[in-house]
Image 1 (tube, helix red, strand yellow):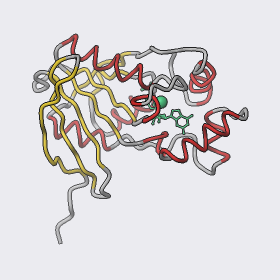
Image 2 (cartoon, helix red, strand yellow; image 1 turned 180 degrees about the vertical axis):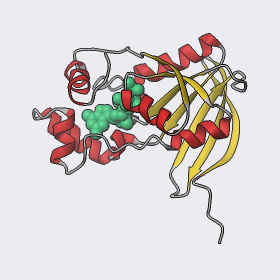
Image 3 (tube, rainbow, N blue to C red; image 1 turned 45 degrees about the vertical axis):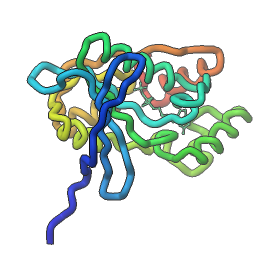
Image 4 (spheres, rainbow, N blue to C red; image 1 turned 120 degrees about the horizontal axis):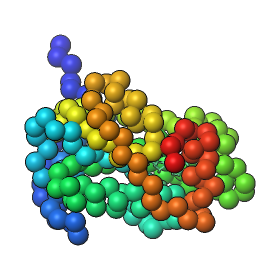
Length: 197
Ligand SMILES: Nc1nc2c(ncn2[C@@H]2O[C@H](COP(=O)(O)OP(=O)(O)OP(=O)(O)O)[C@@H](O)[C@H]2O)c(=O)[nH]1
Ligand SMILES: [Zn+2]
């Protein structure tokens, strides 16, 4: 009996953006979970590729929320990739650090009442961060990317990439979008989740 591949590349298309023309690649996990990658320029070859692993945040990425830094990081990452002329953004469908959109709204409600972002997850019965970044390995492999300069403040992303055999030539900090609404959230990420600010 043959084992189905854990990730399938389904189709690619052009994606014009204010930063220029990206190529959008659609992937599907065996579970049915969908992800996309945007590439810019020629990402083949041995030179490390500027890469962002971005976890889905509907509120920050699409609805202009100031509760987090996600939307600002998304824009800054696309900006940086277009600026160097070559790179990839993996848009991972891991809303709410893996707990999903509705549970994230529940967690925000608890945060409105005083819990921090980690306590809120725990009160709902979830770990602080449920994400598994190994899907990035298969997406990068499918795109022909073996060496990266990864834009993140999250050491766990770097550690996972290294663990699954992606060479991390450099971690590029991505510190944008701090404001009065997300200041405490970002401080909690540094104190409890190990983010490097
Ligand atoms: N459960 C929960 N998830 C949140 C909260 N605020 C933001 N998120 C989610 O956290 C994730 C943030 O992902 P990333 O932008 O990849 O950020 P990161 O792992 O913190 O690290 P960076 O690469 O440094 O940005 C997204 O999935 C958001 O939906 C929150 O208060 N609770
Ligand atoms: Zn966010």
